[in-house]
Length: 255
Figure 1 (tube, one colour):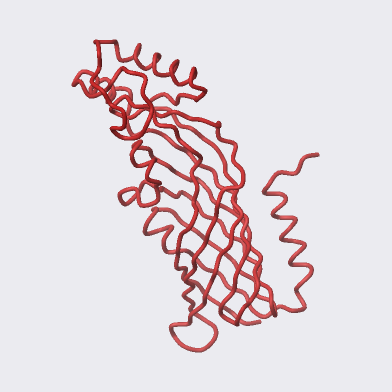
Figure 2 (spheres, helix red, strand yellow):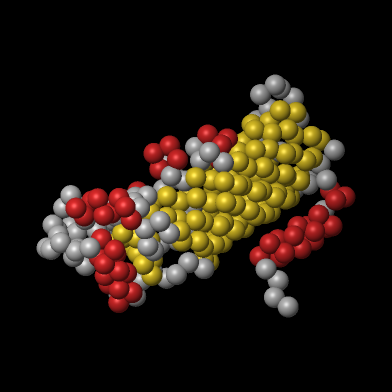
């Protein structure tokens, strides 16, 4: 029977915990600041520290990458005027303690994304009547390749034509008001440092980190076309978190 990614993560977690308990040194629970302030979502993580090894489980929820001016969007996603939302981002990490408060980790994550255009069918119709929405079969981002419409076409008929053009080009057309859903999995490295602002070596903890999470798998269609207000079809690639920094606040307890 096929075991899904989440079940594999749980089994992996149990194996790690069963191997290292006699070397247990400390545990912590923490929450990322960026997930709340930048993406209007949340995150909770628990970390287990051995003599030399670290094990972590983390779960993020309701992350809006289009919040705060699209700070979490790629350049193409911004130009295509897309909204990217992650109902969850979950995974595990196994690391090595370089010093007591500094470690490097290998992290495995799974993310669920919901992607949609910010331009509804009614808005596209309004842009068309205003002479902004082109009826020509161009692809690109933003104003790339845009030309004025050549004729008056019913907005719904033009939407169907755009869908046909996309399909003939080997891309799945995502209609206005529709949402594309897909998952990605990433494997990457992260560097964590722990600081205790109240002094000592336990208690309140600040944990800055820098992480690189490239995608290694996704179940999104190979090519996906979203239409922007200019009538230009932009090809969307599965959202990739890539390189980012964060600061977590939590509580660290020695055992």
